[in-house]
Length: 384
Image (tube, rainbow, N blue to C red; front, side, top):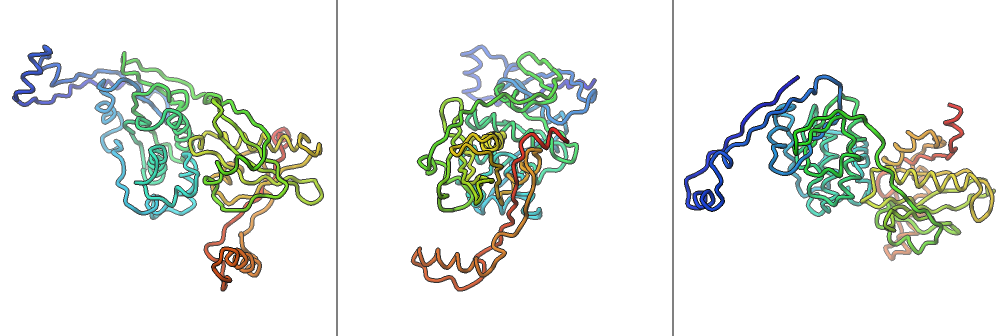
């Protein structure tokens, strides 16, 4: 069993303030200038992917972290410039991989991808750093001050999102996080924990994250302005739609989706799905979407009629989640705007309405790849 036994010494200068501090508070030079750590860590006894060193500040987490996986694994952060983060992260990596990593760590709000790192909120910066780590870092990693500068809800949701994304990596890379916050443990679900309060090491089994209770209610478009800035497309409101909103444990808005019927009243179209940024990455958006789709599949709607739900999206994070779920079946794939004549007509109509004149031609930008999924509930899972 590897034993980490070392003393960190810091020579103290002979200054007036140092001498006065020694005198006033009876601090010995040994107390101030050295810190001894001795701990046995059986990290080679079992395979593991994520470990956590948790404890108060000043107990030696950083010093020990630099020795566990080697100094080359210690992550010191990234330098960001004024370009949008989607351009900075992994310049030699495919666009789909970069946006997939951003979505995986819970930064799924597309407008944020187009902003420089410096204008993002602290929670968005935290997630952008994690996405860049997933894309650009190769091999084992030690992350210092994990979740220390963000709101505790964002810390917990972000820790859970990072753990899921890290475990999905095809490589068997290992990550050790260093933090003074114990509230992330149940969300991070590490394979082992070292608590530096008493230097206690424990293996643990990976478990489900804590439940997030949501209250779902039917409403109208009145709540949409709150969610609209976080939707990745700018679209008009759906005609004759039924809206649903999910509230969190303290009544805060979490998710939104609108449902409208298609011709024949056999299919319900689910659209305008939004999960608020601070809740992204925990899977609540998918659970909410499936709950609403199941209501319509069971006939619990204002028409009292069973309808299968269908959703079309070009968001890479949502597409990946729908592909992983046994409750959804891929039913279509197409390039949005593939009908060039209709695209030109639509863009021209909108430009005239906005007072910008008729559209001259072309698609007006990159064509979106749109995937369609149909909700089948638990029937597919039961027969698999």
